[in-house]
Image 1 (cartoon, rainbow, N blue to C red):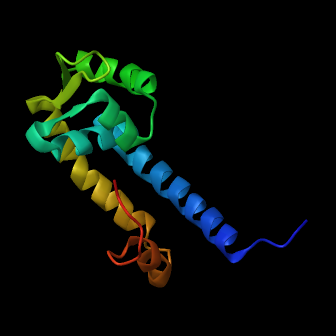
Image 2: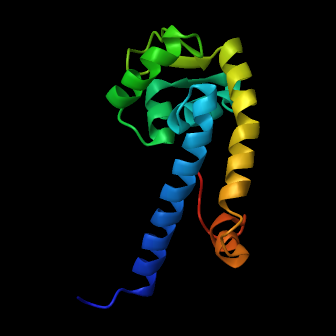
Length: 142
């Protein structure tokens, strides 16, 4: 087995941290009846101009294909968390908007996510967290 590079070690550590955090947060989000990805969708919609994004932009934001996003949105639309709006420019550019019920569910889940994140990161070295989460770490957010 070849020796791992420092960057590879960091990548593997970051992936491990990500997996652990998402699992911990997802477990807690179960009490709200939503997954982490659904929470993430509502986050991006809530913070978008007009609380609306195209399917393509939303899919890119959450790292899904447009068809994968569509499959995830169907039950969210059915229970009233999001709604579909027609875009005259085409179906792929169809608009998705968070509803009033979706905003309420999102706000209720925010406290749970913050608490779960705080609990999950208690055992992680603060220098390690700061290296990835400080504003000046060089990582760009979409």
